[in-house]
Length: 390
Ligand code: PLP
Image (cartoon, rainbow, N blue to C red; front, top):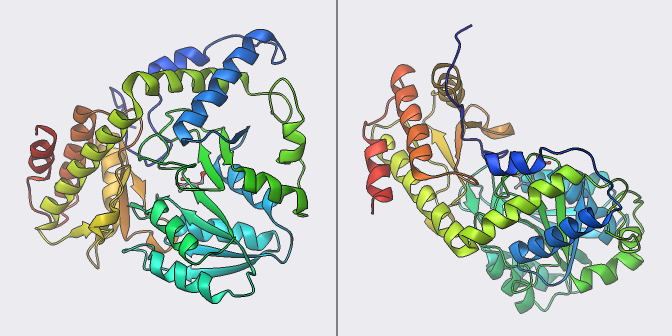
């Protein structure tokens, strides 16, 4: 086996690079999770998370990944047989819908083209047609990590309002939180679902839900079985609303992440991601002039600033690039998911990332294209530098 020196360039769309500061903050002995010191850290984290979600409402934290937080949203709001409308725009929105089906909900899917994304007018049309008000929830993934597309949550909210529909509005912000602006209260999102391992730069293992007053009211009449994730039980728990032993070390890491975000400022953090996203897209466009690939997202209004999916031309296996980048250059990229496997590879550009790190990864991709003999035009890295040096 070849020994690889230096750091692996971790360019996955989650998990992301964990800054040393966060690792150091977590490097500590066990402590009493009922004690005063931990209570202060947890309070700081809950308040900080609310700033990041841009909400003044209720925040729940779980020892789980994003799937856990998805599940918390479903089981606390609905009853078997309830109808929900899934706005399908890629693999993750489809998976959330599958979870709702597994819990006995009637899932109606509005299928949008995965390359062009959600169309708010169609959401409005469907909700207007629901004169019996059977639809209890609308499920949207803000940033589809599988396709590299960031949806206009505010526009979908306005579509729901124009239809005058009372359905709860659920939005996954797992790969947008702390990378792309998300405004839970302003956009009247009833449940916002997040996870630790993306923009928050933490290890996997914490799930979050921001919950509106309307959603908390709905949980009282919901009858799906729930125990660990039961918001009613969590609200009654002191000193922190946490189910069971709190993952103290994760909270220390989260506190450090919040401090880092406060130091940078959320707007500066979003602007950094925007620039990294633009640079990545510029590189892909330049390579694509050689014919082998194009941006998967074909709707420029919805380009994601945290992940770029690259669609290979027919006959070219996207996995070849991913494995070449990993085996030869120690750069970890994302692959295509499910139906996009082999067709798409993904470059994550979220979290603790700066311009030279991105350029290193893009250079490794360009070298991998050459090594693997994939048609492309040279100069992707130059195109990215032109964006970054601006
Ligand atoms: N939603 C989105 C948009 C995601 O990107 C992911 C994971 O990548 C998930 C949900 C699922 O999160 P997890 O893998 O932490 O369960």
